[in-house]
Image (cartoon, rainbow, N blue to C red; front, side):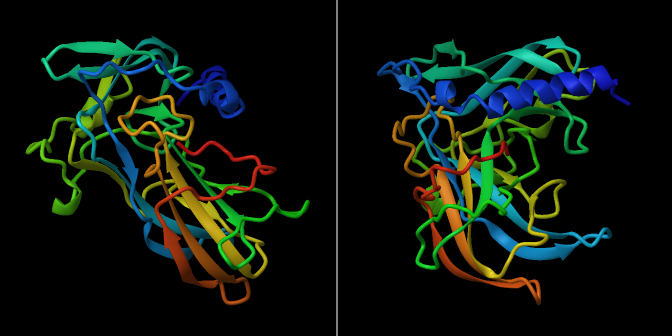
Length: 282
């Protein structure tokens, strides 16, 4: 069992990250021409369903996949462990000549556990939020009584879980797993190395812990479920505009029957309403 001090430390670190969107969103240093950078693409959320928990709460469950369709892997290493946090996190950049260099993403940390799995996680890799729309796909400001709904999951173990469909695989796609789950380490690990190879995806299935958004008490209406990978732009990608980093689904929710129907999907900017605050999901 983790000490209360260690738990408080991890929560403080994650809270600071969640509140530091402005400085984290600053553009990272320019990549070199010979760099082989990843391109992270958020897939359309799949197998959406509403689940009623034992406490009577209703959850909207769904699966997410982050594909790497870039020129090089997303290769992440972490060390300098203090309690349940590793503070030295670096993105290993591969080059066309075979050399490697390290880039330090501002504010990134790795932490242990948080979702019932015995391994380490990278913070703020994906954020997912549910917010109301006007029924035409335009996001609207929530009423004062609306509580922002988001993914409770606060960290992701990056790994090659599924190979991308042939239509998504770049010509340089890896033909074998480069980042197994074991790379995320275990409780006793002092350092970890994880990532997503070119042509592979990190798949978080609907039944995984915290892979849901609480919809208890929501009024009937149209809502947009928005998922964004690398939301603050701290990881270097070859797609500087990150146009494929978001995916969204619009649903018509019936609060009486607790059923929904999908009325729209997209794989571009989610159109988040600026006045709303988005919780940490990644």
